[in-house]
Length: 113
Image 1 (spheres, one colour):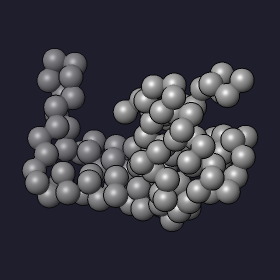
Image 2 (tube, rainbow, N blue to C red):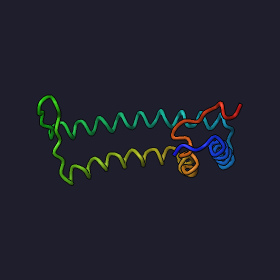
Image 3 (cartoon, rainbow, N blue to C red):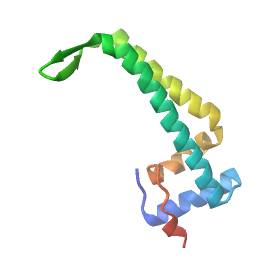
């Protein structure tokens, strides 16, 4: 949900005020968060590949996965575990999540110049 320029400015101001940090500190925090997301996604992908590979069948150079409900639940568990780690490691961002959605993972610094 990318917001307009004005909505993003207002959201950034609310986030910084709520967390009692500057915009540059917010940017550093988001960089750390995004780096951690990459690490967790890489780890989760490794688990998923290990779990899924034995269930795959190659048909005309395409991998086909026939997953039952239990398999889907395991994959959802991997995702939930990653989300829980992020919430535990970055609880302050969970408090302002609704405002962070205005940026879709990107804050345009030119808005503040």
